[in-house]
Amino acid sequence: MVITSLADGIARRVETVGDAVSEAFFEPVIRLGVTGLARAGKTVFITSLIANLMDRGRMPGLSAQAQGRIRAAFLQPQPDDTVPRFDFESHLAALTGPDPHWPESTRAISELRLSLRVQPAGLLSGLSGPRTVHLDIVDYPGEWLLDLALLDKGYAEWSAGVLDRIEGRAEAEEFLAKAHATDATSPLDEGQAQALARAYTGYLTAARDAGFHDCTPGRFLLPGDLAGSPALTFAPMPRAERPARGSLWRAFERRFDAYKAGVVKPFFRDHFARIDRQVVLVDAMGAIHKGPQSVDDMRRAMAEILGAFRPGRNALLSRLLMGRRVERILFAATKADHLHHAQHPRLTAIMQAMLREAADRADFAGAETRAMSIAALRATVEETRTHDGRALDCVRGRRLDTGRQAAFFAGDLPEDPARLLAPAREGAQTWLDADYSVMRFAPAPLSLRPGDGPPHIRLDRAAEFLIGDRL
Image 1 (cartoon, one colour):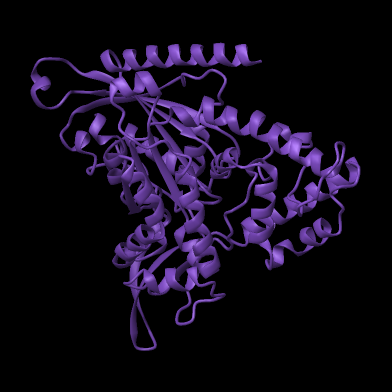
Image 2: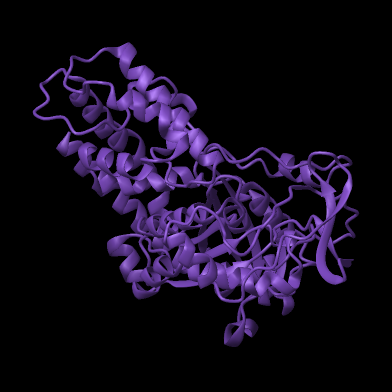
């Protein structure tokens, strides 16, 4: 096995060298990773980004478009034959059809290649014709990304951390009762093991719905073809003293290691380690609505996520020797169309403060990071209404549950982000001096002019940060 692993590693290194040389001298490739946590809007972001790069009438913030240097954009087969294709056409039809609706969310990894014909800028503009730049967009669930933190942990450490963190959560009561009532030193009983795994999966599902983000292992929530396998049949257990071979503890320990070796490591090796630009989508308003604990949990989850990245600059020599590094990371607060534009700077400031630990770590390692408030597909319009003698800046859109038009005011976000983050860090259960609401809107019916992509908020600026320097 060691020889096989060495040979596989050498083969991958040779492939990396070949790709790096080809990209440097012929057709550059940008691999953009798109991830986020549940309901952050990954599918909508990718669909709208592709549509707006193909029809660029709404992309003035992308400098290559503003300068008229993008001559054409076209879809091509993705380079990885074993990775499912991102179903762009179906998702776009869902968003822009006669009865617009949100597409299905990300449940597995997928990929799409968009090729751009771009006229070089600067001194090269008059010496050469247009060149092709490939944008490979890799879509993967944020829950899988959280699993990368497991690679540095053993089963005992992971179990202790999980049990300590979820103690006192109402969603965990049933599972904790089962775990504490089970003798981990007893001989393995497969029925008992499956019952514990089901209870833990039930907790993870409830925790995610309640706004918590520390939901590992991620494949318990999105198992795919691993459903029912031993690699997903374990759960955290209280520390067992000297568990014997064949005990429940030893079985769970072995399955935890198998999960890391057979699920987490291949994902890192085959996909994640090849990314050089990354966007992390965050439903910040959803977390704020659910309360201080959800905000603090999101802050810690984002810091843990960034620990999985390999930030730095993609110099040719370093890529040949060490593989790719993530050069730019965008932390994007999605659904900015649920707020009046006057509050967008406050939402961005909250994002910057919430992700300070994560962003500082990336900046220190050489990567460029940015926080931004965006809406990949604008579903509302703005209006001002008077309520109790006070003018409220609202948004209006089609409610997802009833289909009726409704005006919505989410509440005034604080100018000082510490007013949210301090109670979150201190473990407060509710906001003491404010109430933040959310409303789910359906996509608005669209009538697009030729050359225009779907309406958005700052998607062009997001694209400029992520890929503008390479066009």
